[in-house]
Amino acid sequence: MNVRERFKAVMNFEAPDQLPAMEWISWWDKTIERWRSEGLPCELSREDTLRWFGLDVNEWIWLHSRTTIARPQDRARSQGVIDSEDDYERLVAPVLAAKPDINKEQFSRIAAAQKRGDVVVWLQLDGFFWFPREIFGVEKHLFAFFDQPEFMHRMNNDLCHYNLACLETVLEILTPDVMTFAEDLSYNHGPMLSRKLFDEFITPYYQQIIPLAKERGIIPMIDTDGNVTKVIPWLQAAGIEGCLPLERMAGVDVAELRRCYPTWRMIGGFDKTVTHFGEDAIRKEFERLLPVMKTGGYIPSTDHQTPPDVSLKTFGDYVRLLKKYCRTT
Image (cartoon, rainbow, N blue to C red; front, side, top):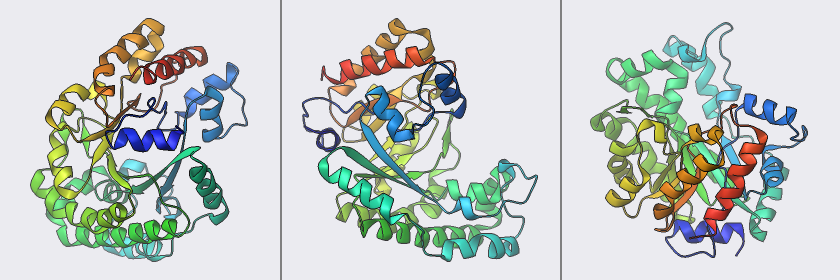
């Protein structure tokens, strides 16, 4: 089986010859700096770095508008982009109304590799909690649910139309294997909003996009840090079918999630904070995950970006053990 066949099989709770050995996300810049100082070739792209380590390749396409939204100078990211609806009209609305700009040559190359089964294609879109927070700023965003509900809906409606345009543009060239909404709506103690607010401000927009994805066989998932446990029923009701990265330090237990939600798809779950302790600690962590790996619907990977306290050699040990455990299922 090739990597794409394995990915599809395990995500459909079937039995591949082995699990994909994947690293779903890029690495911290400081981590890459350290590895380059220890022998990682400097010219490698993210995908070429995966190949250098011998990992399976997922082509990660994140289509978002934020790179073209002008942030006022000397303004921290946590403070957002706007102070008023006038700012939104001037800085944000025109960007969301524009046709998504993609590199058709790059996407055609990815489509060819996907057709050969060499890569899994992963589309990520800004979600309806994440994007308003980036625009309002952290504190103003949380108040906006109550103080500016019409504006919140207007922003998410604009984002929904933009995301639909992104998906439709991508589908003209290739069909992603999985689509994630970037949300980060949970932290260590659970979600940062109530079920009522989630159902009012987020679910309606998911439900305009997810059916189109499912019609094309794309698996809809959510990328949210922190403890997602309480949120899973909300996500399932909205049409989401899985999540990542399943952060262990936030209290996420993949075995408990599998027990409570047997059809829930999962990627991640390996506690990145133990990696730097070396081979014995890495092996112990894989032993913790192994029973869930055998249930299907789960691909082990780091539960967020590998930190810079992990040496190039130690990450190589992690990859070697990951591939070994992926063959034992």
